[in-house]
Structure formats: structure tokens, C-alpha cells
Length: 639
Image 1 (cartoon, rainbow, N blue to C red):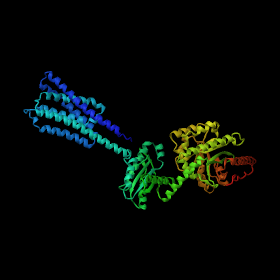
Image 2 (spheres, rainbow, N blue to C red):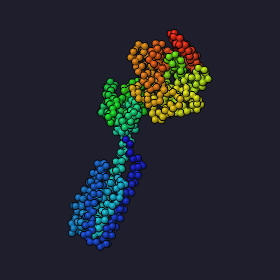
Image 3 (cartoon, one colour):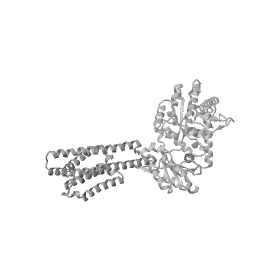
Image 4 (cartoon, rainbow, N blue to C red):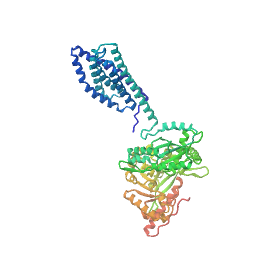
């Protein structure tokens, strides 16, 4: 829903236009008087002029009704003013002695025609600011007709002082009507403009600007209140899969449900695309959580639009009001709590407290350290082999980011990768990974065994539009056939627009496209045949405990059957034991990766591990041909 309220410049233009139309109406009326003068000097009988004027009355009445319909869009006060003006004029003329045909002044037939003229002119004046283009010619003709037959009577009048006073009153009332209506219309538009500046056009709630103004007011009050930020989970996926009209329906319904479920006196706003905020009256902590749990339940009801239904989920962050907090800090605390809720468990609540504050401080410090580490090239990449299930022949290595510390320890990727993803640092990290992959491929291109290996790099959809692949391929044009790019399933599904086009363009080359962590977070499998995928990596959560779980084994078999039908290679992550390897081999998994094969190692050390794996593969193949028992594969790289 578009907001089409006028700007201040448009309002000034409208005001000038109203003034110009007032002057134009007066000019047209003056010109219209010339027509009856011509009739008068043509020696037509007075009766003929009156009959001609009365004959035009039905036409004028029709035009009056049409013009009145134009006024239906005006606010109630403007319509009332217009009606009161027309009625007052008619009553005023009916009560004056000028209706007496024997009195000095305007005769009866002239007074009747003037009343008709005033009704028409009043309607024209009241709609002076709203003339549609298609009504301009009709309105001009109406003014000319009205003044032509009225002017004929005026020329026959006895010009007593009362006549002059009456005509001057007519002129003033008409001009006043135009100006008053112009001022009222301008005031209405300004009011709508102010409303549009502080309210959301889709939901009718406050927008971010209006909400911040309310926060400033609330913070000046001694009363304690709570701030909640509500964010819809996976709303982008709803827009992309069900369309923007369905998305608008979700946003509108969410606003309506917030109004219904939050306590009376709450201030509710839509402060972003799928983000809402509410200031709630003070409640004890337990009661506040109960209220917002009810709100979550209300939001989570399915939304139906054109026979399509979708369950909605939301995450809520809560921040309490305390003395000395600013509006921006209060919003930031609620926002941090909301993202913590979304990170830990979607469709839940999180209250910003001291623990959250300390965690936020630590995260900011970690982000600063990580940024410095990136600048100082402290982030390195280790390699973990991926082998063929049947004989453990190395087929690829995956590059894994590592952040070593001065004491020899490492900061877990689970800590710094989310920081990189939430900042522009993910682009720099991806560039470093691709550069490392290119260096390895270039080095191994002349190796008798390693020249066939593929190097896999974990990539975010953000990299697709950053030109990273073009930069690397310009330096190493032959790397395409030996480079695999891995996308996390949740990120790959949300890839749309320019990133999706870039993804398909990359797939048209020899690059391998791989889904990482398959099976986590989504139940829809439609993307498997809508995206140009080469490999699918089953998440380690499906592999853990597979040795003693027949249901897991059956699930793995179903995934393998599906990928085989789609001609997608299946890779299993998290292989820890020889027994798990044997089970996956029997079920038809094509490739394996995990600590049971080899732990990640530095690039300078991985070559020895790869050589050992190649030797084991040769031994396995030879023994298999001789019919003897296949030798057991021990973990190559120590912990």
C-alpha cells in the first residue's frame, strides 16, 4: 500500500492553485455577463430571455448534482460547510423584501434566477481545489450559462442601493466560500501528511519515526514500562515462496493481532519490514512473560489468503525501563534480546538482563579482535579430506577457517563465523578462503596424485554478488573444474534475485555446487530440483549413533534414494567410527568426511595424510580383487 500524501512543496502548490482558480472563476463570471448584454441589445423580448433562462434550469440542476458527487470525497466538516452555505443563501433571499415584484430593487423572476446561480456557483466554489481535468469544460460552460440568464435579469433591474448591496454580498460570499474551503482542504491535507509521517500505511500502526517520538515521551515519565520488539521468523521465505500480497496480509494480520492481544494502553508500532515494537505498561516479570506468551500464541495462528494458509512464528525481545536510559539504548537492548531469542530458539521470548549485557560486551570485544585478526592475516585455513566410501580414495579436501591464539589454543569457528556473517567481514573471509583454494589448486596441479583433487570452500550467498569468483578466476582460470563451493542449506534456500542468477551462472561453469548441513531447519525439498546442485552433505546430526539406530539407517537410505533419483552425489559428514563407515557404505553413501577419516590439518601437513589415504586406497583395491578381507582404516591424523 503506497503512501501518496503530499509533501510541503505540493501543499504550497495546491494553495497557489486554489488562489488561481478563485481568480479564474471571477474572470469567467465577468466574461459571462457579456453574453446577456448581447442578448439584450438584440431586442429580444424580456419574456423570451426569462423562458430561455428557465429552460436551462434542468441542465444546471443536473450539473449541480454531478458537482455535489465530486464533493463526496471531502471530509465531513467541508461538506457540512458547503451545504450550510447553500441553504443559508436560499433562506436569506427568500426572507428579503426584494422578492416583492413591486418593490424597488430586483424583481421576483430575477431573484429566483440569482438563487439558482448562487447554488451553482457555490457548488463550483466549494470544489475549486478538486476539479478533475475532465470536468473543467463542463464547469466553465455552467458558469457561462448561469451568468448569462442571470445577467439578463440584472440588466432589467432598477439599480437601487439595495441591488448594489445584494450583488456585492453575492460576490463576497462566493469568494469567501472558495477561500475558506481552500484553507480547510489544505488543513486536511496537512493533517493527513502529518499522520502519514508518523504512521505505517499498511497496518495503521505507528512507524519508526512516530514510535521513537513516543519513546522520548515515555522516558520523561517516572512510570516504569517495558519495551518489546517482535520479529517475524522466516518472513523473507514467506514473501519469496507465497508472494508479496500474501506477505502484506501476514503483516496486516500481525498488526491486528498485536492490537487485540497486548494490554490496553500499550503503544504499538511497525518499525521495520517484518519488525514490530510495543511499549507495555509496567507488569511484574512473570506476568509480563505470560502476556507476551499470549501474544506469541496469537501471532502464531495461521494466516489464510486466497485459499492458501501459512503458520506464522515470531521471536520477542524484552527490555525493561530504568532511570537514565536513552531511547536508542532502550531499543538496542530490546533488539539484542530479540536476536538472542531468534538465535537460541525461534518463536520464543528473551529478556535483556545483566547476563545478556555481559554477553553483548564480550561479543563486541570479540568482533573488534576478529576484525584486527583479519587485518593482520591471523585467520588460517586447515584442510580435511573427503574420501570415496568404497576404498577411501581422497576426492577432495574442505577448507576450514581457524583462529589460532598466542597460547596455542584456537577460538572456535562457532564463535567467530556468526560475527563474520553479521558484518562485512564475511566477504573478506570468503576472499581469503578462495585465495587459499586457488593457491592449493595451483600447487597441486602438477602433482601426480593430487591433481585430480577438488578443494571445497564454504561460501555465503553474500559472496555471489561481491565479484569474488571473477577476481580469483581471472588469476587462476583453470580452477573451475576443481573448485567446490559449499552453501549452508538455510542460506541457500533464502538465495534469491541477483544472488540466485549468479549461482546459476556459476553452475553453468565446471564449479561444483554443494549443500552443507542438509536436513537442518527446513522441511521443503522443492529446492533440490530448482537449483543446479552437484552434491549434498548429510548433517552430522543424522550420523551420530547410527550404529545402533535402525530408524536413522532407514532415514539415510531414503535420502540416498532421493539424491540418486536427482543425480546428486551424497556425502556423509561426522564419520567417527569404522562401523558407521561400513553401514553408510552398505546404504549407498558415495563419499565420507569426519574425524574417523582424518582430522583437519594445516595445508603443509595435509599432503602426507592424503598420500597415506591414497596408499590405503590402493591396498584396499588390491585386496578386494584378491577376495581377502578389506584392511581397517585407522585415523590418519592424530587429535
